[in-house]
Image (cartoon, rainbow, N blue to C red; front, side, top):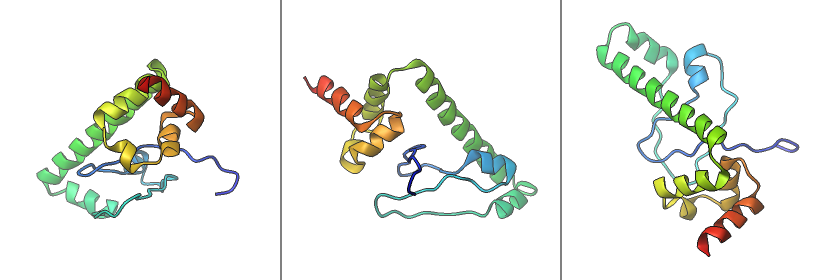
Amino acid sequence: MPGKKEWIYDFFFPNRVIGAYSTLLTGRPSRIAITAIEDCEVETYLWAEFKDQYKTSLGVNQLGRFISEQIFLLRSKREIDFLSKSAEQRYLELMQSQPDLILKIPVHRIARYLGIHPESLSRIRKKMSS
């Protein structure tokens, strides 16, 4: 995408549900693209089918509620982290929660996820290693 800045919305790891929460609520297409950086298996569900199941299945209702709550909690934490923590703090927390991240994801993408330039992340990493 020439001229457009790449934003990293999130990283998703095994056994996590992914999706655009706004699409879930509004039914409108998402402007977010999902890219796999390594081979993976993906299960997809059509929202219309899922929504139909809401009418008859307590289990699907509970699953939908759980997914919605998890997405909300993750988004809220990310917003609060951006407002209240430095890039260094966010990087440290990311490395503590996902220590193998550095092996799987290029540094420039981690920097984008943190909302900083790759050079800034290099300085943070250098500072933390000394």
